[in-house]
Image 1 (tube, helix red, strand yellow):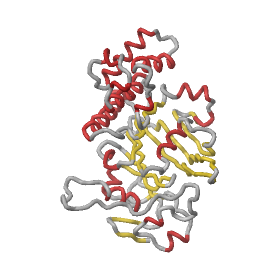
Image 2 (cartoon, one colour):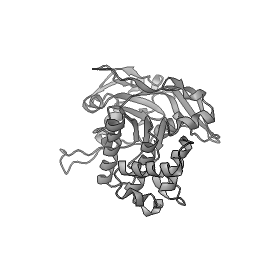
Image 3 (cartoon, one colour):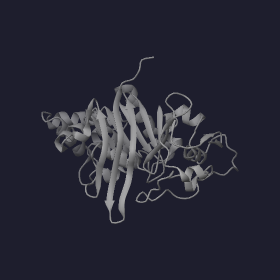
Image 4 (cartoon, helix red, strand yellow):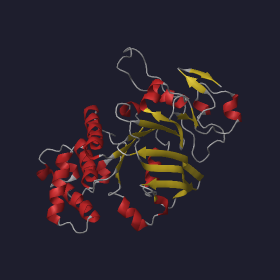
Length: 335
């Protein structure tokens, strides 16, 4: 089997927000990679640092109060954190595109979809005429399954459904031929059927165009069907990573177990209740030196509170990593 080439390699990334309440460590020493033609999911509760991590990769952190304070972001052999603002403009869109959480706020309400599509295309290709950009825009809308794309180009965002707006956002990425698409909660506020359609559309880009995709979501159940590998984030750190099969069949971190237990299954008894993760995530402005999941962990012991937060370490099969003092298997824990 041919080994895939690494497209994006993030090493020890740290991003903080400096507020009156202190330093909020939103991304705390995060490392991950994405291979060519691969779908990677980053999952975790709201506030776990998933979106801020991806915004840091594209240097879209609002400064102040935000600041990338350390790490490396290697894309096609170049460290993006050394790039100037002008250089990053050439990467955004052409190299890496981002689909934001809510397309209604990402698309400009006073311009037609066609106007916004053609503007993006011409921004990345100064020699492209308006006519050629319009043609490419129509083709992009057609490629993402929007019916009557010529007419839809003339629509304003408010004239389209939520699913249609999300497709329009994806069309912008398709039109620019991005090598990596970051989809930040791409199915938020969409019904279940439309969620599946949007995910299938994203996955088809891997097959047709060789695009790599990062799906950022709080819904672990959504990505288990589509992702090749999964990174689980909690309190600004990655606590477990591995192939989707590894995390589904042999989860080793208590937080991953909790996420899986909170997802409904088709084979569950209809009277069986979902199991929530008790408690709330920690305040990122006051992260404890010990394991940040300790107050919520059903397997926690004195070691978890008396020792420093555990680092990622390999467990079980090759490519499976977790950050936990214990070894949780099948709901049982051992030190």
